[in-house]
Length: 223
Length: 199
Image 1 (cartoon, one colour):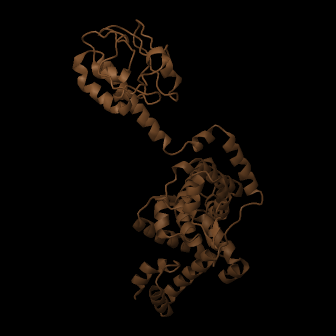
Image 2 (tube, rainbow over the protein chains, first blue to last red):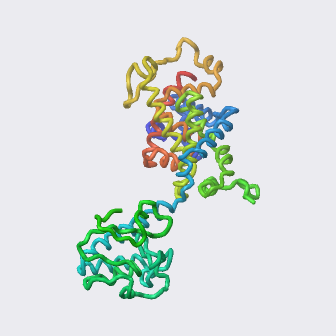
Image 3 (cartoon, each protein chain N blue to C red):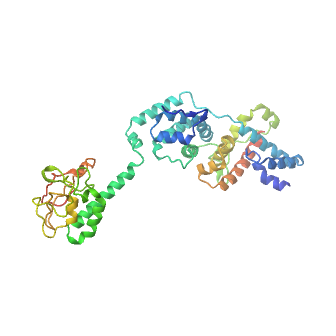
């Protein structure tokens, strides 16, 4: 090793992971070169000094103060964010996506037969409950399926057309949509304005529960 | 019955403790604090130079660990995560202190490599061996660390004082390992320049 190589490598000397043979090579060269020996002495002091520095300790009241601050955090509103499970945002997104698809499906379907494709998507989204006419609690998200007398069509029957007496459908009605809505929800003629009542599962936000069950009013669609 | 942080004489890994905390076992948090409070203080205090500020930063670090526990993923080493939180705050504190200083070692004087050079020059009238004998080596080291520019100080403290691996330092500082090693060499050269007159 020459002085140039020594100067290039000596910075590694204090490192605790330096290979023993590298360290010995530096020491061998320094033994024969006073200038490099002086530099090595400084790096040796650096290695011993820095490696020997003590771990500093926190003050005696550190943990007690931290515990107090933690207790405040746990009581504060931000605590609710901590308690929200990791899957909650994903479930919320899935719920929102299903709701949007259902609403879009309904809006398109209410324009007439051309919306058949969307209706199929809406049914697929709604799942088996819609196919069977809707049991309580199994209605697709956001879509009302009230049955006669305040209940939903819990007879489990599959309906291609609403039962007699539940409200006559105009000839241009959409049977697929009817599966979603279940029994007893009369469809207004296409183009009519109405208020659509969403009466889904009880954990939907209150916004979705406006209106009277089964009510069809002549006002713009609101949510 | 909850498993203690020590199982059969071996410490439960930090990552496992953190997962338990994330899942609602608050009883493990004091163990996390015990393991890291002094390590973090050692690093942060040597970076910011003020004990009160350093303890505030370490306390805030643990609060952020608590607040963000639900985001902790075991793909990251816990030590890397907690050091990153602490050092980011320490870096901000250093920046704020430099802005607040009006006349100091760092504000006036020449710069080298874009970093200010301290004006505090050791007294050369004293014989080096007398100075060395008079001062404790530890005190000398602390003084030299204090005089380093922040980016060199950080790496010297993390590697040569705290003993973190290059891999960990690379993750904490978000630098490639090659950059960490070359910065380490420059930091040691600068440290040597500061230390040499004091020996």
